[in-house]
Image 1: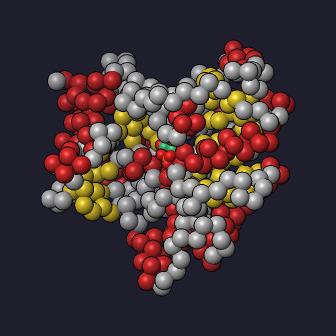
Image 2: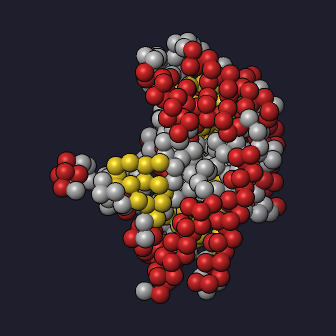
Length: 413
Ligand SMILES: Cc1ncc(COP(=O)(O)O)c(C=O)c1O
């Protein structure tokens, strides 16, 4: 461990929660250098929805490298990009009747959000942004400015052309009034150009918005010529069951930001899906060296074909999500004394324990029991479960048993 302490910046974070040196991983299991196996209920903050080293995708990656295919290509045409674009069209856009184009951006979620905000400003001529309390959009200056501050991850970034509305679980007339007023009011002397929303908040504590509220956002924004950006970086690519977490809500976003699990293998990649009629970029206006990650294109195309050519994965995610929430509900009634709440949908779930220290204690004890879970939410009071979508029932039940023991221990010590 000394190497890390001596040579790595103090900003390191997750390693403080999970003080092991990891060496190998497969599926929902991650092993440290001594061969100790942990169940991974964090899945790379949602970047490993298809498991560590998914065998089908590993084969694609090995073949890609062996055959001497391109790794880096900026945004030139490549065979892999053509296959990827066709797979997005066939398995994602067409079935949902979305007339959108793919914009490749630098490989992080934050870059996708940056690009979305810049396009919205370009189209509307309005710079201010409306977002939501509890949201998280990244760590660049702009994306951090439109994110909620979380304990342990505070940033000094605070651009002023942003206003955060409250998270809405069950919409009321008051919420609609506040939304309508906010969208019509300048912020820091700037008109509102975009609303950005995580339809199910990830870092904010596994919190789905009321679909009726998402529909209201769409209606109001259409009326005012404001763009709707769905940040699906964490909740998308099947995490909540359907491919997009907004499905069924009528949010009908103008721009959809995707990253994390879009490559399937954890290879960094981010894209925006942009409504075709709004794709008004001029060539090169938004650029970046690491667009066109051909390895990620190749694994992503296979992931889309393998998991999104039918409804099996979506059904299994919903089923496993029910198992998780039933189990969390059980823990809440047994140990929560009325203070715990269960949240989320699909396999983006959380147990909010209304107490920062208790949540940290549960996560710490879970690690002692070889289970990796993270805390999140404003105040870090939610124990969040992001299992790989491909986790087996046995592993899922085993992990939930370990979490149950951790909750029992932490609430009684
Ligand atoms: C919803 C959401 N948007 C954006 C980001 C930023 O992605 P990245 O860390 O790849 O910049 C995250 C990261 O957790 C996220 O959860």
